[in-house]
Image (cartoon, rainbow, N blue to C red; front, side, top):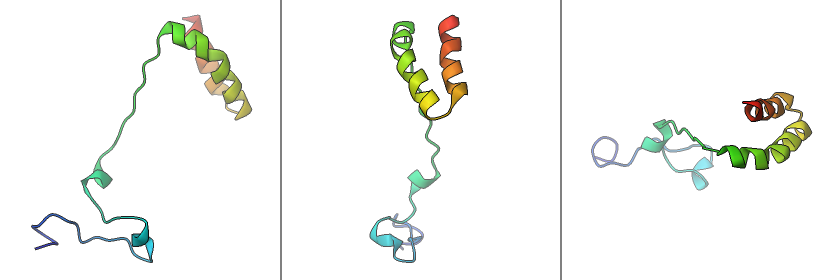
Length: 72
């Protein structure tokens, strides 16, 4: 019953991982997508911080992307 009809999955983590992780569930097969919205005013305010962090993390294209959005 438990494997096929009652609900809980019988696929459990092995190698001691069950101490920290549960068995498979529907959530393991769902793709989550996050979106954000940023007003032009918020973009202007946050752009210097984003550019600084991007440069610090050696991601110059991210910094250029913020500058490009400000130029629109």
